[in-house]
Length: 276
Image 1: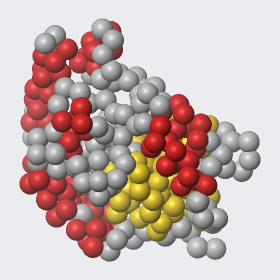
Image 2 (image 1 turned 30 degrees about the vertical axis):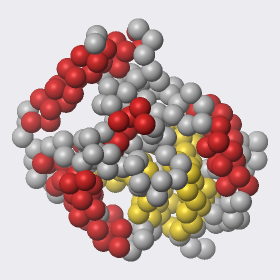
Image 3 (image 1 turned 180 degrees about the vertical axis):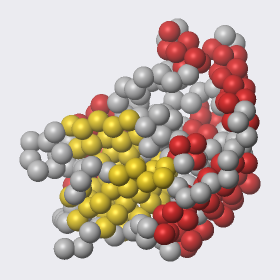
Image 4 (image 1 turned 45 degrees about the vertical axis):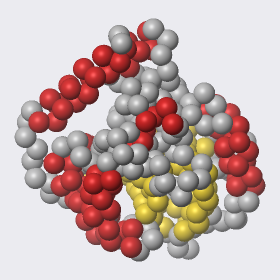
């Protein structure tokens, strides 16, 4: 029985703070040291959607990329600025990939509205759902079936003042995907994991299945900020145990106030959008 491993990272926001580059490099070193079979990064590789930020990601994770052991989906931050994330899935909304005992259904949950920093919410359409449905039907036996996307398909608590204010006046900034519930219903009993990002506080939710295939939904959180990631062990298409949190190796300390000040500026921009 061959036991394989799958790591989930998300919301790296490279370009936000120099320390995040060090964190990304440390995460990659840890993944390589553990000889992780495959890695999925669920969006927001960049902070301002710049090609230079995407190049930072490529440099940090180059060994895994070159080995074909890393998959990505775009996040809303990858669509702002220079729109570096537009073609991360080759221009497709849904892509299937098979590797190391994992059948991946990679979904682009971003839209053209994400070209604006102040419209961070995601979207999927019924065409996307139909494609996901068809791919789930085609999933090979004895493979772990994973749906990966950036935005959350189920409701989650607001995390920032800007999100709370936006929700209070009916804006969709913090809302789950409009068709997220239908995506979960499609996956129920047919997929093992839904991996997503967007929210920076890690959360998880299990949905028991009628048969042996239970569905679990995991938000990866902000991996560079947390300096850790979840690691799943699986064999013959089944997750063996609850995932483990793996902390990255030694990372140079960040300046105490550098990151909070940066996020504060982001919060002020959110507030400006709410009252614009």
